[in-house]
Every structure is written in structure tokens, then in C-alpha cells.
Length: 95
Image 1 (cartoon, rainbow, N blue to C red):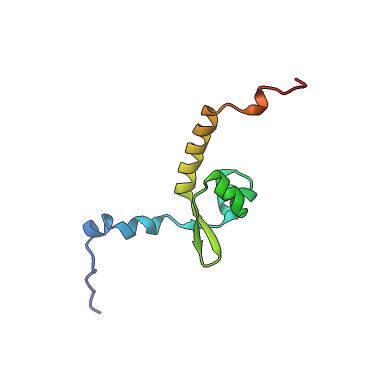
Image 2 (cartoon, helix red, strand yellow):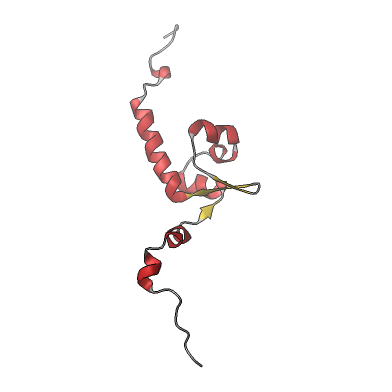
């Protein structure tokens, strides 16, 4: 049997943009919730996703997530929460 020569050299393939996305798999809401230890409804409810600014992909009627993007979002969202004072900590009329 003859060996076939690969179409792309390893140098060209490593720098190729499509190869970067091949490693980062799309995950379901259940998998994203478990990976980030966040409530499932953050990923299922479209209004909550929009409110929180969670990055997602809509493929036909399926919603999928990239773990790397979700992790970046989680770090950014946590930093925003630290900067903003929480209204519940200041007390109310009965405090």
C-alpha cells in the first residue's frame, strides 16, 4: 500500500483559524451549568441569558455554548458584580 501525503503540513495547520475552533466543542445547557457550577435556568431561559449577557450559539432551534467563552464571561461578570454596590446590603425602611 502506498502512503498518501497529507494535504496540509503541520506548520500550516497549526496557524489555521478553523483548527482553533475544532478544539473548542459546543456544549449543552446541562453541561455548561455543571461546568461553571451555575443554575441551569441561566442557560435555558432566553430572557435570563439576555439579561446576564451569556454568550451562546443558536443552531436551528438548539442553543449551544463554548466553555472557553462562558469562562471569560463568568470572570467578567464577577468583576462587574464586585464593582457595583448591592442594593440589598444598604438596608431598607425596616432595617
